[in-house]
Amino acid sequence: MDRREEIYQKALDLFTERGYDNTPLSLIAKALGLSKGGLFHYFESKEHLLYLLHEYAVARDMNPIINEAESIQDPEDRTRFFLKRYTELLARKPYVRVLIHEVGRLDPHHQKAITKVWRRAFDLVRNAIGEMEAAGKAKPLDITFAAFALIGMCSWLFYWFDYSRPDSAANVSETFAEIFFKGIGMR
Amino acid sequence: MDRREEIYQKALDLFTERGYDNTPLSLIAKALGLSKGGLFHYFESKEHLLYLLHEYAVARDMNPIINEAESIQDPEDRTRFFLKRYTELLARKPYVRVLIHEVGRLDPHHQKAITKVWRRAFDLVRNAIGEMEAAGKAKPLDITFAAFALIGMCSWLFYWFDYSRPDSAANVSETFAEIFFKGIGMR
Image (cartoon, rainbow over all chains, first blue to last red):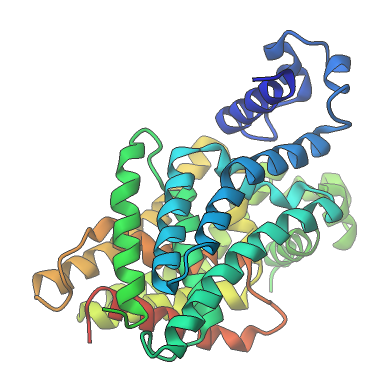
């Protein structure tokens, strides 16, 4: 792990544990044995750090899920894969909670870059539902709102999930998959 | 509208428009033609104001939905009523977004009081699913995760909904109801 990654990990841990507002940069510096000035070698401001953490988590956690899902041809399998992996990501990496919750703190151009990633995940799900519908496998429904139903039931997890029991994530994603696929009219 | 209600409305409007962090009490005072000292006649701090706004919205918007739902005997009708009214509340009153999103800013004892209301809504849905299952109308599933699926798909709305088109709320809640009830195995 290089120094930059070490800084990101420590910042994510502290934000997750104490909350974004309750974690001043001076505390992050102290936990890393750095001066606050030393931190500014790596980023310009707390907002900039938050953006770099988003970028880091997108590259490490989110893009691999979207990329692998996109390579799956069957739309049902593709959606199942995304639902399962995304739910388990949220359950197993509590820091995702802080990132999603605080996305509104980013400067507009930073926010736009992150929203693009979310848009890609949304399009993946929405297109897959459209393909299932076109193939007569799902019943006709509003595919935009159906995609938000899936992403919403998964994403809301961070408001209620008991992070001390990460293994229940598999049961959560199974229940969600069962409701969603039956709900859109699949077998 | 009494003076206190006028203050709550103005604070909700400003928090919704500008965000909680970007709205200092001095700005709320100015918008009301009051001194900042004058505001402290009504509450003690910004956190206290946020709590009073939660209480106000719970009493006016959320409790009536839960109360009316609880009076409905049939568990499917009860759940449908809750899903529809809760989704439409989120879509038609954008300030609910700020309240839910910033609930973590409340002091622990204030947060506990608000969490109680959410717990009541959750129990309402979870119990209704349990009743449908016991009557053999819904298939066996994890009723806790199923209840969170419903509440999650509705609640997530505030992350994506286009508040300039409040009338689409009815279509959103219809799509969600269709997916959810079919999803748990109802007709």
